[in-house]
Length: 553
Image 1 (cartoon, rainbow, N blue to C red):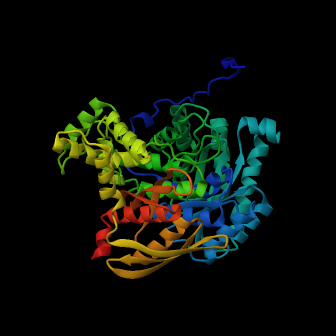
Image 2: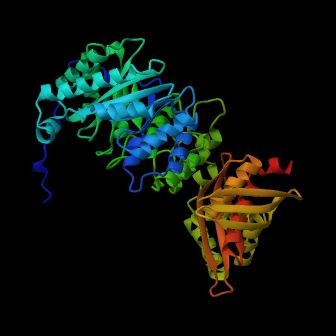
Image 3: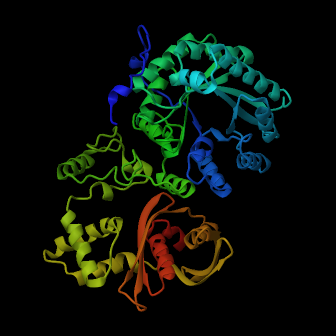
């Protein structure tokens, strides 16, 4: 039954002379990633140890300094991952790990066991304070819920005393903060801080979660401003927010919360998380970047972020995802394309960015203008693709069509005549298939024992070079060996393959769109063996990249 009268609006917050609407964000908040805990627990298939390690290294690489790594008291894999981080010295000196624990003594004790040997850590304790949870889940009154919070705070503080050499930070979350009466949320957090006695030199973290997004972002901002102006010891607290995306406003809510006084924002890469997800760290950071604010994250290579994210979480990234989606800098409208071209021609190197329909320069994050100013000649690309498929059985993926189209268009303009399918096929071969310098594949073998092991001999600038690598698949194993051999970081953005013809004599066509050290490039190969076609297509793309000049030197 679709009946709106079953629901009621979120209550307003009574604030006189609210200040946040007049504020402007001039510096990035403290970022805290919860990918490895909140994000991981929301996956249909939680990450393997190897995937967690890979995602951890990405989070560190892009510059996130506080990372919640798990719930070690509730999960043996989380416990083991915390131990791996500590025992293998995987935590940089400027990075602090965070662990979550309920306000229960035996779980808190287990948490400190997991953290033995750490140099610094955030111990994050929580209990739910909302009206619904109090009355319908825990059947406790206000005093009973507050007692759980203060007792948990005491146990956390007592547990830390056994490790005086560690730089501990205590964090408390009144879970379902947005469903909690605001005066009561302040009362509970004040009581927790009375236990911890933080000060301006040794602050605690008070994390205010929008566990389920229940209101418009302005009401959340009101809640944060009220909270910041009413807690007794504001100087002793880092006020943090943790927004969810149930209404599609998690980023907006976090931004307004920072305007309202929040110091810290928890979220995940690309918004992974329970239900509709957590606040998207990449989107909010890029929002700041587009306003001239240093985001304190290195997002210059989003293809690496997307590749790592999709391979670790098994979740897709929408082509319309803010800032980094495949299509977000592509204009299909002719009038948009015309405006973009004119603005690009007038854009000066030393002036602020002013290009219609492009809020940032796509080159800042590794995207080129070819995709941006793809002329609205769908029939042109469509016709080119049609004759190749009709006459040669070649079905080009869209991104390969985009690369080939301007070459065909240029040839057509120069000859001032029709370009036939044979000429188009020759252009395809000349520009994408015949890229065999400086790297060629001489021979290779594959070993399988749960993982793929690739052993091959490459000819690089006329000299034989051995390549060995391993991974979950042949391509991953080849790229592992390639990085070990050359030091080049290659990420696969997209891949396609198909048979040409039918039967036992059919050839295979393979296509790769890759990122080589920040540059996007495509390659193609055709061969009677599909695996060889795939590897040769990768090598063709690498040869076509500017990085190949380093190999040829």
